[in-house]
Image (cartoon, rainbow, N blue to C red; front, side, top):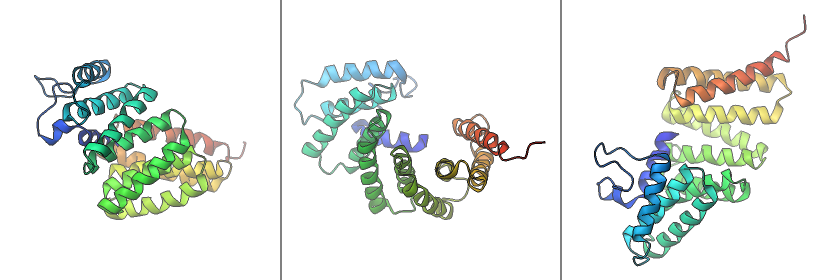
Length: 254
């Protein structure tokens, strides 16, 4: 979810730990973060400014992180991998106790590998991140459940549907109990389970009906909690419409 992604990115940057907005990433006037090409241009400028500093310099390390995230957010995933792997190596060497920034960087790395079609590497990272968040925060916390959803997505991308489906069922039940039925993490897990169910039995009425029920529940909850025009609502609406079309194939011809 966007809130989790924003939190992860916040953990990457050293400026947030100091409680001050980073001028390379935030507008000096409104304090809002930069986006798109502006964010990427400033990240490159920050890297050019600090790259000659000692490797353990916090400015250099933070500039490397900012560049990796900006490249990722601009769809330049192969370049982002190079920057983020350098950042992770620097954290291991000079800041071995910075677990939060390390996990956030590895999360973004996993996303990059997934976008590049490197399903095996993405899955390896997602398994590691899920295990760490479960041990660190507890299996029923939002952080661990987001990691579980990301792991399930990686399993589906790797065509490990038989593993993903029961895993999602278990995590969805736990999320509903821990967070309530209207939490965004619960809605995203529901949509992912619907995708998995369809992968298992797209030609079986029972599976299509289950997917439709999951998506309808997620869609209505998203309308209530997030609003009709929210990106999640639009995503769920599109998926629900697709499943309703699949249901029509099971209706008898008149």
